[in-house]
Image 1 (spheres, rainbow, N blue to C red):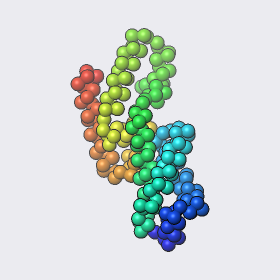
Image 2: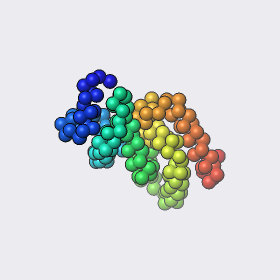
Image 3: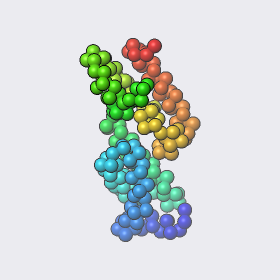
Image 4: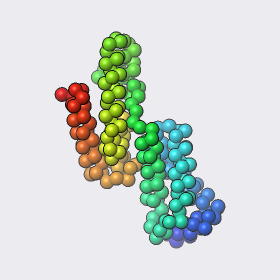
Length: 189
């Protein structure tokens, strides 16, 4: 870390408004991009940006100025996003799920509406959502990012600040647990 960043951190620890504003301006886009990638909502991302920055300001006095600032900011931001996701729980949009012929599931249901099939789909979908929400965070979040947001393993590793090998392992184990739970409920097999 260069000496100018150390001075800036020291000034922030003294609650210098100009230094705090400099930190905000410098890292605002970085924090926002992480938040947006977790939420895919401008409003939620802006709320999480603000919440992350408040946490950064509240904890800056405990920050070790001999360490780089960016990973610390990233960890606070990712944890804020993970807490938000936990509260919101996983959900799947019918616009995101594609059928084999390239239609969204919503369009396929509308074009071939059959009440019995629709109810069966809703029940199945609800059970899948329920089982996904029961997964531990370390499995649920990577699965959602991989399959619903179509992020690569590398992107998931980057955004969660978790090693690539751990991400691959957690996705594998999460899929296995989800499959076993769905088999138990008669939806796989």
